[in-house]
Length: 389
Image (cartoon, rainbow, N blue to C red; front, top):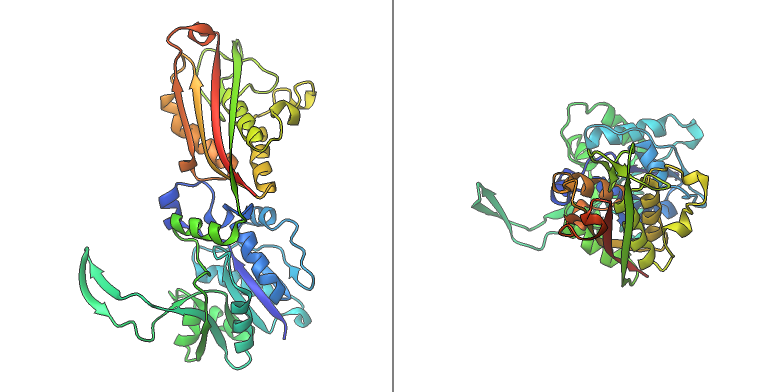
């Protein structure tokens, strides 16, 4: 039996984003040195012959780069839709366009935000499809269930025979394809519901408490404990100075700040990003920014310093580590940093692929003392903490 897996990555993760304010969709956040969805793909490919990602192609190509499992073809990603159902339909239709001798007999549907799936769960789903048209993993509900309205409990729901549904969910391919084609108006929250509505029996096999769907910030902490290696904390400090210069834009922490002068430097002279890069490289014991991007090389003339910070973030992930937090202090009399601090935090978080709550940007003056007090330039200090194996 040929088995395919549809890996769903088109969701926006609104509940997670509402808590973390992360500019990065939850399925692409770094977990144990790799994107969440990469862990999900790694969990699926030993069990299937075809992997069909659904979502933004550029983001998926980046997250799944280098994934070339033996015996499994990783297909090009197809765009998803506004709902889970439309995304699954897109994946099913992509599989149906394969030559007849390559189409799957069975298909697994898996959430890209579930990175930790024990192998025995996936095997149990596939094995049970020998006798059932649809199979899902589930975990019995252990807690007492209350129904409430406007903050007031209205009744207690008996928990007998209640299960929490998980993925991957497995189905006969042609059956699920046909049900999706006829379910345009359905509001089913998972594919098992389509089979149930059509009168097909759906079996349930044992899921796992560790098969966590990344939905809230605390889920990320739990997943880091499961997936991440033993990590040790490291600190890094960075400091940089640039003099003011005429006829240059003022770039600070990746943001263009209105001012009468910019900063002098070989690149765009972003003193905030330079200090932050030095702090990261220092925490990793990998030298300083000049080692990685020598000012003697014309390649970096007037370069956007965002490239430097992206590289620093990539070095953390390449080492299997994670950024805990970064704290920057810009030192200048003018311009005022406060009105731009939030935009700076968001830009730095975007470049480092972390939640904005891990980035602090603040400012101080030197009470008119020294070169910053005389408004001859701007200085910046940066402190970071990272975890690395």
